[in-house]
Length: 221
Image (cartoon, rainbow, N blue to C red; front, side, top):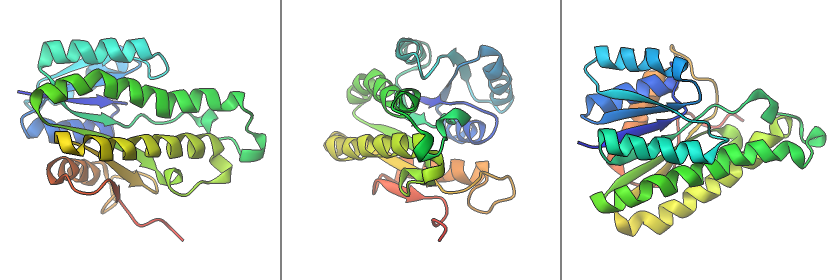
């Protein structure tokens, strides 16, 4: 049995994705900064019959990510699917003319250095399996920069470039990298952008293994 590792676990999309991959027979590793935040999610998944464990880690502390993903592989089985979808902090979203070079340190660590760290941690296991999926979830500013949220626009664009390069570089190894763009808010009542609908879409990206970029909804405008 292999593992679905979720970086940025939460009660909305994260829980829905974990439930969907768990229903498909994968064990689930939940990564987030707070153990207290993770335990209710583990309990809910366990009630659904999914084997899940909590692995506290901070995306701004790369060593904790490497250690958490290593423990998950040892305890649950090799990571076959990695989903990177933590929610950016509000202070990443300053207007462009108010954004200094120092203001970009954390957004770039969050959206570039942390994904690179995670991929490097799971890639050997995927290669040993002979298969794997890397899922990146971003907002619309990843493809349409928004001057009111400069930090995430810059950092998401860099993450997109990295993920696209992975898609091209790993395709011959049966390791599929895909990006899901969610242009607007995730709402329980949304047809295509509810947590359950997005989780189903992410599972389809894992099984479909086609092009790199996908949209939950058309970009507005």
